[in-house]
Length: 238
Image (cartoon, rainbow, N blue to C red):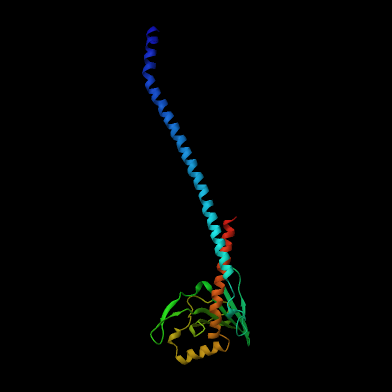
């Protein structure tokens, strides 16, 4: 027992440095965790506040842009009298499809214009070799009669009118993908092409209609843009 009593102080003394080291490591680890938690808290606080500042700036910019566009918006003069040739216009907010429709001697003539599917402006060479911007509107004309429809793909800028393609399709628009869609229009006899264009002109589809469609497309795009600005701004303010 005495030898054990004498041994115990030595064991405790020997163990003391190890215990002190462990305690020191624990202290360092604790400080590290504390520092890490402070850094994490600071980082999270910065992250949570940054989007708010950016979001506020974005909301303000959207409001300024919407106000500017609204102040400078005016209905184009070409549209004030309404659609030409007895057509009736139908459209909906948020939808880029616009349709002009009328009935002619048992036929239903529909002109469909997709704002999102208009071609990019391209430069073309005129008769004198000078480059000019081609800004023609592309649209589809459907002449429905009974269970079939004659469908024309057209283009016009108000100065010219051209047919790009003609197809005969079921009126219910359930044409099979493998069905014959018609010939290459530019390869048709010129007289046949001219007669197709006269057929459309008789139904009010000509370059005058193209002169109405171009400002109609630009106006629709502008109105949709203004509504988009307001919608995004309202979303961010929720």
